[in-house]
Image (cartoon, rainbow, N blue to C red; front, top):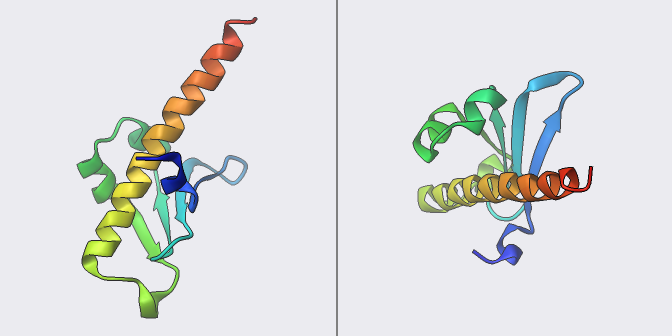
Length: 99
């Protein structure tokens, strides 16, 4: 996937009030917020276990796309979260090399 494919994707957390939860936000069509209740389980999940733990909230219930479009968004968010984690490892790994 090209980086442009993730323009509407956001990785969300609130470590003050909900340190164990993670959210994924998709602002393209169809718009949704995916709540992951356990960040620990999420970090070691497969796509299949992600689909089981994900609490999907469609932000426009009257126009939340087809079942196929919904699945494509969830696949995109999963791929985005993997890429996000890889970039964080690269960033923090490069910083620790200078310490």
